Amino acid sequence: MCGITAYRGPTSAASRARSALERLEYRGYDSAGIAARYVDGTALHVRTLNGVASLTDAVRSGESGTDATTSAIGHTRWATHGGVSERNAHPIEDCSGRLFLVHNGIIENADLLRAQLVADGHRFATDVDSEVIVHLLEQALRPGVGLGDALADIVARLEGSWAIVALDSRSGSLAGTAHGSPLIFAEGEEGVYFASDVGAITPVVETFRVLEDDDVVEVDAGGMRWHRAGGSCRPRGLWPVPQTAYLSSKGRHRDHMGNEIDEQPAVARRVLEVLTPGIADGALWRGAGLPPLDEVDRVTVIGCGTSLHAGRAVAGVFSRLGGLPTRTLVASEAAHEVWEPRTLVIALSQSGETADVLRALDGLPARGRTVLALTNNPSSTLARRADATLDCLAGPEIGVAATKTFVAQVLTGACLALSGLSVSSRADAIALDYDVRALAATPEALSAALDTWRGPAAEMAAEFVNAPGFLFIGRGSGLVYAAEGALKLKELSYRWTEHQPAGELKHGPLALVDVGTPVFVVDNGDSRLDVDVAEVLARGGRVLRVGERVLNVGGIPLHLPRTGPSWGPLETVVPLQMFARELALRLRRDVDKPRNLAKSVTVS
Image (tube, rainbow, N blue to C red; front, side, top):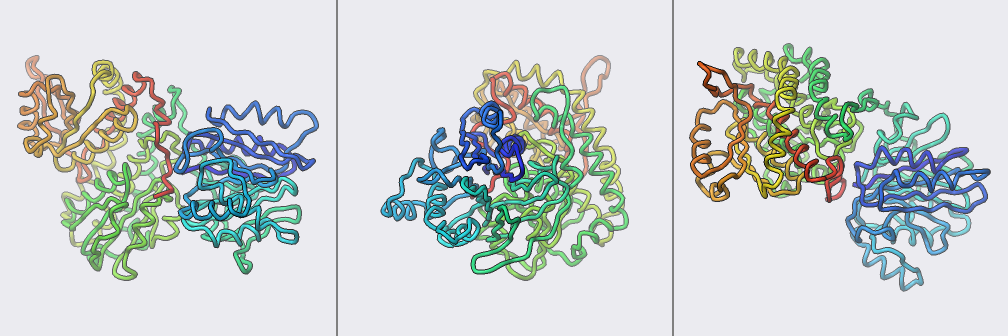
């Protein structure tokens, strides 16, 4: 989950690393730090618990006057091993203060290595697993052994996952390697960069390379060298920076999340403009290289959190419109599943680096399945491992709680499913046409939801600011949106929230309903919801219904259920997102950086 940056060039290395680090803070904000080499071989080393922005003054003063930094590494941390403290912040240094290192991942045999290193006389200054790496590197960096070769040697002793960049402050050399965690390398006009994500360096590069597992890249005064333990390897192929990576959410809100919620109609339009031309003739499906749906017996969705919810909505298109058996799997629980032949596996991950999703793919049989990656990062590990990839085209999302990426994943998946069904024998032509027309109306539906609920969401937040908990219910295609609404509120407010199928209320969850208990009802047009609502009202619960249409008949409000497409009432997620954000703001939460969470979950 941590974010890594590094730069080597003629000047201002620390400032460049810090600027890139600002664009990676969504990956972890427990602490941050910079280490840099001055031209005289001394080092700048600064760490903080107050966010990347608080490094600015230290970096600026360190580069003032005639001083210049020519190599630098940076890190923003999401804590796994060791508490949140300045001493546990990265970059971590060796015993001599010559070597500095940043790490994303988990070293599973760190305790054993630490005991061996202590016995060898090394002094440990932190509680983090990552520190063993820098001491191993200190041992390996002997005369005649370069930084990259030393790094290649020591990773053979590591167990777990890692993206590592090391800095030798004496020579200014940088070396990076990766195994099970993302790391990219890029050359710009003014120097070279390492980063966890291309978004960190989008403003200064046009292309980049992705390190495969166990690649080592070394950059020193002699240039760049790619190699592996025991031999060399050619530089990996160039990837262009996606055009969507240049987009940013700007608007009237101070927080990114508010602007990203507002951006959702525009994201929907972008997705539909790119993908809908390939629906009617099946070109989108065929272009992805997927087998005809008539040759698929089951669709299985794998994901975590919001991506899993989006996958459930997409699965609804295959099952409700095409009659295909579907199942959804929580990625972290997929290891012991039994896989049928002729299965289409749709793996969803916004970052494409979600460790639990990647580990779930390890358990798939070698034959009899096709893996489609649905991701916002087409150069990610997930995309490279899949048989087919579809970019969800959301653009950068900085708020840790996913909003526009959820909408983009649902719509991208729906477009693909409709494309496959349009040239199969499974779908009814009339129902297919209805869904295609509903798809075209989605941006306007999202926009209307924004306009309609802006005021009421704020009013509801004021009303329920002291509510200890919330219940979200739905039926059929609406249930996934109830689940997503509950997750958003849980992530942002730190209040208990629970989602349940509405029909399950009387089988236990109704015990949670007391006088005034807020109960959100996602209305997908199922007439049985009226009975469920009556049960809540009879116990004094406060019903908050989203998704229905309200008409005035003789001055009396008449509530009519909405009917929607096979993926369900997508626009209902908007008021639920808005309410979660408004309540969190009233509780003085940081809606962009909810506690204990990070955007890209690269550890499992």
